[in-house]
Image 1 (tube, rainbow, N blue to C red):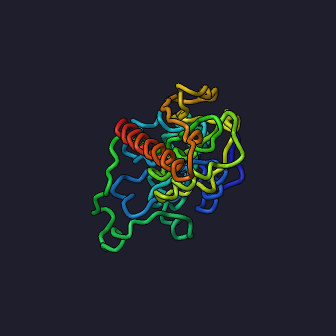
Image 2: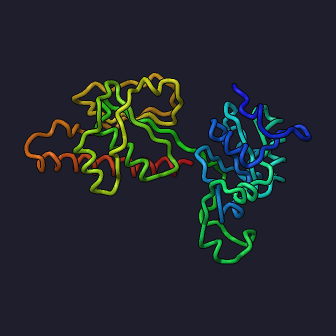
Image 3: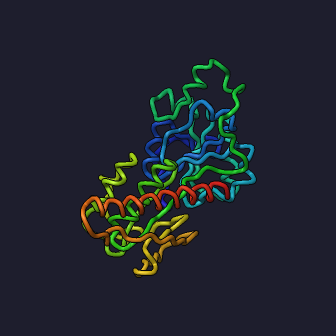
Length: 284
């Protein structure tokens, strides 16, 4: 495991401390930011970065086994003080690549690095310690679920499913691929998705081979099992699921007649994956 902290920060009292800029660069290189602020302190602003985990310090002991030991972790709180306690706990539990974000989110925000703000809370004038969070997180860590949608050509059903999942939950990491990826996304699929406000015109068909060395929480095949040979993913995955949809690319007739079929399949995909997200969210 490469030490992406090797040329960053300073060592003090047995731990490495990074500036906001150094932390931002490390996140760009694959490090995860672990926010250990308590729930009421995350109400006004959160870090706007890709690799973001939230686990309040008070819940760290019971959830420490869920954190990724194979990733570099940058620990932060409001000002960089309580995060030191979290770093010590992580080091004591065998986490080798751990650093403290000096100055916490205060310095991060002050130095102009990306944050998500709650304007209602900020305009209220209340002290953060008096605010109640809009969504109190109980006994869980927020980590992005990684989902891979598979079919054969990766031009239609899997592309629509990818776009729908990204639309339904921006915190997911969603990809789609095919065993025999074609050259471009089906234009009928692009059109019917645009009708419901989801743009998949910039998505591209990809070969499943590109993802064989990656790890996913869910790999979901969407081919029509009765009429097609569904692809098999040989990489590392926690849950393998199948939900077949008729291939609208087989539709015949006029453009409008074809679009009726595409809309029907689009709506079926939307309904299925909306229910799927509700189910996995309730399991947390």
